[in-house]
Image 1: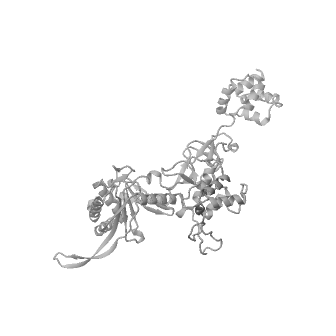
Image 2: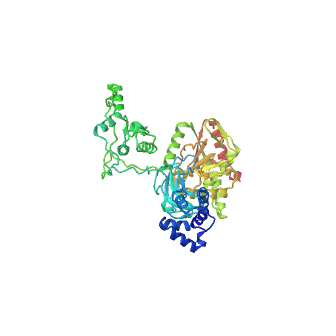
Image 3: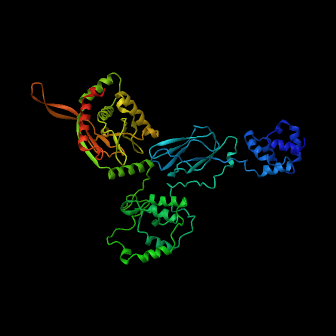
Length: 527
């Protein structure tokens, strides 16, 4: 067989030259002047999966030595496309995510289901698992990066056997910048410096009060505050507003970094003279700048970075208080019988808390009064078939409400076990989305912090939340069997229910509290 035929058969995956070492040696000697040794070694060690692709491409070429080498040199199948790992949506309200920690290093083999990294969502820290087998080739977004948009490229993988060191970031996808780390003012700016007249126009035309951090970011990226929207108090253009402009510029949604000089002049010409004049009151247009080394100086402040959880809590609470008509009803409940039952359970080595009895009493009451077990979807109320109670748990990153699913069908001890497990997972940031999303009724207990009573904010789309204070001894005047008055000590707690008046009116809320009080004061009803 001629050497050209051997080359054609090898290219078509019909013969393996490694089985014919003498023939391979002769072919290597005859091709020494036409090809380099690394390419020849790559050909002789070619895997069967890649040869399958070569066979399809080689079928259209003449079976001779020169044509085969020209095809090998020009083919693009020698390097497969990498597998893209994108920032996933791990909760319905998630818009951005933070890379907390990478659990794999570049070059490590990964199997489907293995953990790649930890991502902080708007609710908790969730582990991202790999969907494919392969090798982690490139970490695009380093750990510690904040506010990574959904769908952004965070890593690249290749299949096993491929050269992971040669992987490059695709040209159509750029690595998202760590927007939570604004550039320091002392670093040199890569953008051309803006002339002094342009800066004066920027300050003159912008009718925003800029925070110091926002001013630095805008000047660093040659952006104008008029291209965005001020969301801070009293119209202050905040750091977050400036970072949104930077993101829009990175995404190409802002065609020009700074408006041309003509629009400011036309804008200033169209504004009446009295409008361009400063305000009559002596309020500064720019908040006072903090002074390094003088933390207690007048007018200074310390900027505290907000986590995703804090942002979501602030957004949801603001929406709740501004859009939901809150109504409040308060009642005192006697815990004497509950404390007695609890002592009896402790003797049997069954550990339950007063809060577990409160959750059970609320679940039984909701089952008896399904009209309160409702949510508001924006158009009307929806009655839910299952009693799922959200229990507020305080963590270092904010308040989160894990859910006791189908609480009406669980006993006291089962509720106690569920609360312990979910509370620990909440504080460790390990709650799964299905463990904190949804719910039909919320309970917030601040009794362990010494709070007598308080009113809580409704957690939309739920219609009610029950705020529980501490139980306290109270002397009450009662009558004995003979009708003689006597002072007797009672253990009381104060509960306040916040209800959505669109769904639960005052009469229904009152009846709910009366039934809840009767169930809690008679533990035998709780089963």
